[in-house]
Length: 534
Ligand code: GLN
Image 1: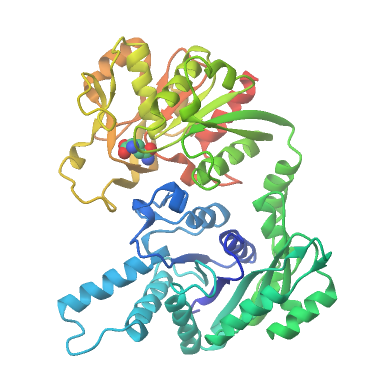
Image 2: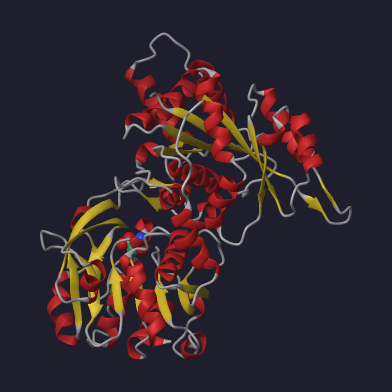
């Protein structure tokens, strides 16, 4: 069968959770036996988000094939079995880059190159390219931004044309919109949704289904009104109430029959849905966990919701695997000093230092790590969190007082973290880190091996610096061992402490591969150790 397309747009305001909605649609269709893939279209002119800071963009999510992508791809992979890569995130930057490269080559000789048809054709081809990988039955295409934005227009025009070309029975438009409750009037308002759908219709798109985000349930007469004014069937006005956990959303959609609506539209037959496991092994545990623990995440972007998205989710997954609620305590690394660290960490069962770039906040992270090491508090270091653990150990356990990473001090006498050999010649900043999945050998009888129960693993990377092998012998003598190493023996991928209940730090990003129903083994074991400490 040729793939069917679901186009997801958003209206009224941003942050309506289109990414979670798209992922949840993927989940309920997988439960009905279909193979899905997902694409995110981002209207910004950066080629990828890899060069943006977390204030601009939140987390940069990394795929197996080394693409730096929008964090919605993280939701897609957590909710579904889709395997995503560089083709699953289309940006205006990528689209123009490819069109302009072809223009310079002379592919359009004699022609004026224009938004319509050249840019829109390139968008359509990029969307179609997704169907060639793994032959999905259904492809969900999420258009970033809000309807009415100038920069998303070419994407909307492209999906309009696609539906026209494929025939309307092959593509469905779902519009995620806001139905606000106005407290002073004690009323639910439909006007923003009417306007938003009106805006879509102006450019030739008529949504078939509306997902109405709301904090209060929407009465039938309000649904009727929305249906009438927006020209959709009454049954296609779906109420998407606020929920406590994002993992409840697929259950809510299935309860409202969203899967049936979509499959009826496509005239696809299928078995009945099965979300039993998801309900029992994910949502029930989140709602009624037996245990609980408090984990401090020490980072410099803790004031942003989205900067450590996958880390926060992976901690929740580690909790689910241990029947526990994980309370995440966000600690600003710039606030952690040698004097207040004990105070800040009181009542904390485990400490995690996530990835990052630049010197700001580094000394606070090192103070937190020293505390975790000496007080035997479970510690999990990720990427920069491994590099800072190595610096701390070099300074405070090996007597190399001014040890540092050359990222922070190029003249340090003890460069325990230094630039990867392959990075020394790199001049261009975009997509030039060590990116994507690489293998590592796991040493027997280590914490890492206890977690993975495997001798060879594949994990995703995003870094330029690495552990400097020159210091390996000294560090090992003092009790820090390398428990994961690249197959050629050159790169330390995991380090851990011998005399500590659980102190594991990794050069890669395990958070990108964790799922609510399949916690990453390191997150599972970190939470287990934290519960034990408690
Ligand atoms: N800044 C460090 C490096 O480039 C760590 C990167 C990270 O934490 N993702 O190696």
